[in-house]
Length: 492
Image 1: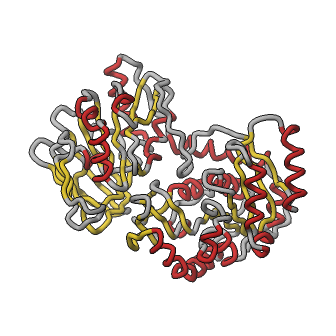
Image 2: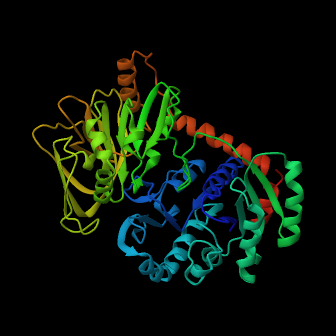
Image 3: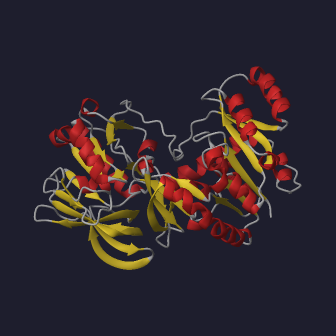
């Protein structure tokens, strides 16, 4: 079956966005296409319609392919909780918590599962576009690899190798990667792609010709550096810290911050600036302060406290929103009786919201629809958390959950204080739809004497940007040769 795998010389070279581009190109050309990444390491995750957890990068790729995201597109998700520990999620559900060494010993157990599941996917689609992780030249990991050349061998996929020229050293990176591959692995590499180029191609091409002579592989194109309003790649985000618009939104950059994609939709608003804050000095007086999600809430809260940011947050007099872990931090205390996050079993929180949180063993993963809070439209979001939060006397709920994983329900969620200044919710993605984003931003605009605005439809913009992405990559790469590598003879 036709398939192609995008591997890279390292992390953040553009594998994810190129997979999305190819998925959209193949879809435009009339093929049913599916993205696939056997193992993703990311703190940005998403909940599917059936309540399973997957990496956000494959969500964007699914949209590019015209598909609803499903967990088979990313069967293994690793969510780091410290430098040496991570939560292992298999087929959308928590499998275990493991150290790096423990997970390394588990990998071969998953190989047969990945092969069997991939063969099922092959029967459903005409083309599959796979993504590797990091670099295939991590020679210390070769014997247990299930995401780069190990996966390519498992399902017999041809590989395109991508290098990032914006960082510098792209020729050395591509040639060095090829040098460290085994002969069998080298055979799989059918060509290279140079990504994120700025400058004059005429000056670059002599180097490309020399690279071709060195590694004996064709170059399939040079993709220019571009800025599109699409989700940031995992681990590749540039954290803006400048105020460049009328509405100033400050997001606390937690050490274990998760789901920073929650704020991508805010960036499409023309009068909004989203910046990331790591110190009390940087905070200033934003119009909205957001405390985001965290994979290790207690540890991040303690670090905020030690670094002085907690005091600055408590002294701040403007609008505060806590999402997921940030919501928990706003309360009176957080208890961890089962050691879900570590050895600290009880910590005093910021005491800005009259709520209490207990971390539980079971993870909540749900897609929801909500009403309430002066919204004239249904709000869509998803929950990914280990905690159960209880409201006390001085806090009231803000949302009424009416659907959970497609089923009718009726319960309350989130909390707000009596002054409507401090609010928190477990719902990720609440800015993706228009309802809550428009309400909150117009509240700020009204306070600042700015003109009220209708918010843009993020989903429509995403579709336009994916088409734009596809055109950039189509114009840059030898798409006909990529089809030929996959075994498809096509005039393009």
